[in-house]
Length: 264
Image (cartoon, rainbow, N blue to C red; front, side):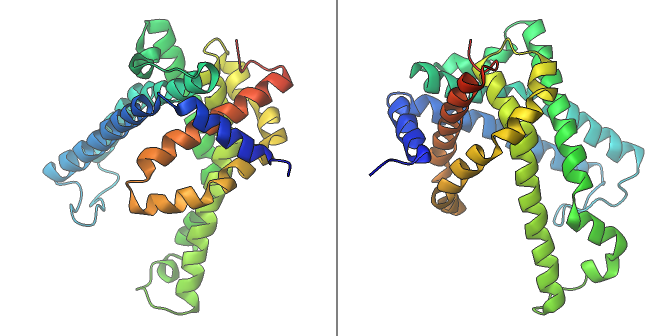
């Protein structure tokens, strides 16, 4: 029986991960711990300054200068730490390409001011593009604005609450699709080839992303069982590196077929 493309990619990813799994898990754990720490610090500072209800997480005055200043500082810190995410993907890319990654791959994009600021700008533009498109397609947001009282009613199992939940599910699905189309392949290209320019990686990549959307969608769908296991949290330690290496394995071949700047 002929093996499906997604099965072949997963098999290649598992083979490449042998001997590299502990490094990939350590890199992923460091990235997750770093951003979780920053997130908790943000909430702690907001609570300490009396800007949010610590239990609900809601802001008392989201337009206050202090609140906006803390949120702005948080965004800047996250942006300047974002090359850690690129570093994790670099580890996965080296695993997919060379079947070998190093613990230092995580800090690859912090080596040299030029490389660092280029990566920060790359991530900033991708983030702006993602939030602009996903924001414009935010069904839940529109319902909250135009039907605020109905949308924020006390929860009850009826048709209205079902529609609210459905709107949330549809919005989440749209955000995933937007990520796949506008962010996924640019991040893969950056990890596979650091020489790719911002113009080629962020803007010119859109046509390639649309053309090859079905490949990442089918690959992600083939992981649906693995993603379901992440509900129990612990399996994510294995699933995230596995899916990352599989995604980069797929992107490696697609970039090679397209003659685009995915590989050096």
